[in-house]
Amino acid sequence: MLEIIQLPVLTDNYIYIIHEPNSKETAVVDPAIAQPVFDLLNNNGWRLNYILNTHHHSDHVGANLEIKNKTDCQIIGFEKDQKRIPGIDIKLKQGDEVKLGSQIAKVIETPGHTLGHIVYYFSDSDALFCGDTLFSMGCGRLFEGSAEQMWYSLQRLKSLPKQTKIYCAHEYTQANSQFALTLEPDNKQLDDRIKEVNNLRAANKATIPTSLEQELMTNPFLREDSLTLQQSIDMIGMPVIDVFRKIRQLKDSF
Image (cartoon, rainbow, N blue to C red; front, side):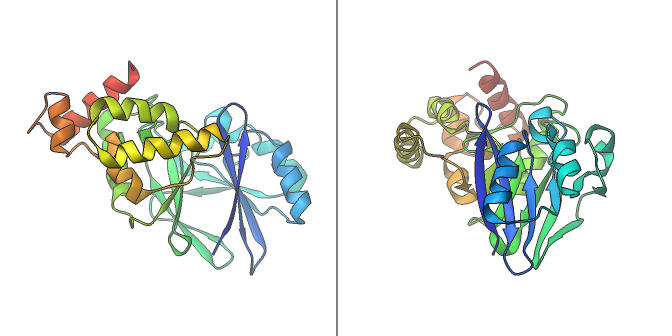
């Protein structure tokens, strides 16, 4: 199993340090800034082997070169986005694998937030590092891709095992929950989750990771086929992609 350490940085970003204890190989996912990464590596006596980038935005790749120059690690990213991933060494595509000791991550293309977004799924550790594609009770804004692309990307993630832990890159849960509540005010699972989230944030604790099972019950962007949700936006029986597009539009103006 991977050892996963979550570093809160900037306003609401999460950097993840993942360590495979048998091989002692270590990777960092989406390093926005360098110093917290260096501090954690030094405190644990770990040597960094890889940077895993999900997409090109500066709050995900901002520390790539500084970290690479100091640790001599290799940077991994999507092959079609190599011109936008600083210092990229290993270029991957849909279905490729990343090995971290005995742990293997499957690379899944998830365009929508950006056209070159990928995620890393470590099945043996039930861990999905999904950048800005999927959030707790939300999904990424469509900066480059279309609603159709994002919907298809999320369908890929919905097919993963329900026990999968969702390690997304931002602490957006509380704000996302308030939007979700406007769509499904009678969703008991959502109400329970909101209470849990509010308690965690009041104690200055993270709401991430969440689980795919939890998201399937509470995340409106994974519930476009819910009749109660469709009814709340007057779209019962409409194509699910159209329902998803409407939900995204409503969130953008929320």
